[in-house]
Image (cartoon, rainbow, N blue to C red; front, top):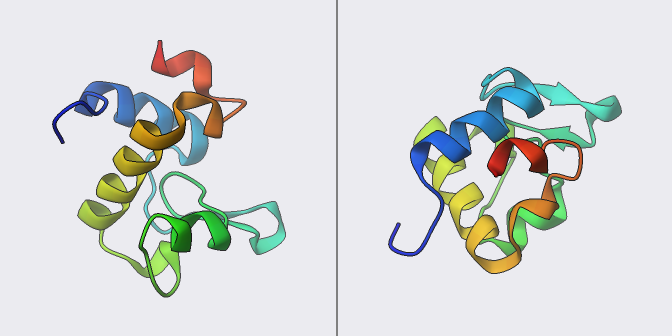
Length: 83
């Protein structure tokens, strides 16, 4: 994505969030997918349905959109891996 994070940056965030597992579910079900999206965040980035059921490519795309719009601090614990 032009102007977006590199693939390496996204992969570091994903590894920190879910060990890169696109089917990961954490936080009692509140955080879902490779980037541990909240449902409201996923939908705000144009996603529909369960983030953990979306293709890995779609999760990467939605995470890149989120990063461009709001920066790495959307992943407060893992933001350090984006620098």
